[in-house]
Amino acid sequence: MAGKLHVHFNDRDFRHVQLARTADPIWEAILGLHVAYTPAPRLPARLRPWHRRARHRLQQHDLRRTCRFVNGIAPADARYFPDFLTPAESEDGITAALRTLRATPATRLAREIRLAARHRPLPSWTRRLAAGDRTVLADLADALHHLHHHLVAPDWSEIEATVAADRARQLEALETGLPAVLATLEPFTWTDPVLTAPYPVDSTLHLHGRGLRLIPSYFCHTTPVALADPGLPPVVVHPVRRHPAPPATTGPTPRRHTALAALLGTSRARILAALTPTPAPATTGGIAARLGMPASSVSGHLTVLRRAGLAESERAGPHVVHRLTARGRHLLDG
Image (cartoon, rainbow, N blue to C red):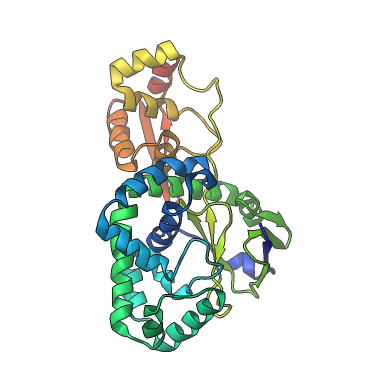
């Protein structure tokens, strides 16, 4: 990796750090596109199954054409792509994000397209976009919506669950202070007061009391992504943390697990075993990410386990945390 990203904090910045509430649909759409066009050997192991599914989806002609269009302005190997493509309103959903994108002022379009053109040749249609052509801007917004809907949305439950598990770990670390959260971010190194990570180029971001919005991303890998415009609220998108393997002694023995699966069903038995105490609280998203199951399915199974008196749930801040009851523990332990 050629460079480093250095993010400089001061005392005021610690009071204004924001942790994204959920997966960001626009960032995931663009970074998912990058993953789809990255050779599988260059991807972390966790993304290779999704890469195979994405390559199958790209056999659809309309989706390939959409990807080529978006890739023209935001390719995977770009040192910079325009910041207007990833509006902050995306935290409120894809509709809010695209509404903001369609309203991007012409002056900003021109400025950011010019900046992108300094780094690489751009498709000819971007000249019309830089001139403020609203039809081209609408086409770009429609392409991002199509990309999200057909490439990324089929796996949205898994994406949300993985990001939710990462956020749960961040909130747990936050109990001992923000530096503990910064120390957990991959691939960053925290040396007070500077957060450092590998980056395509050398870049320094001084927060100057504005704080920082941290967005964990399912598709971000290897290096983080930061907004380039120093006039915008600072944002850093970072990879979700790898999930540690559960201890070998956790949960029922293989024979016991087989018996539980026969009694409860395989999925429900796995979820019950996942409620054994771990360092991170057992949230729906966290369990779904650990087991590779849709969050909606995990939620349904947890409802059944609660009704059977095997699990209990309670709200802890923004999350619902699940744990075994004495009856559930007795069933697992045999």
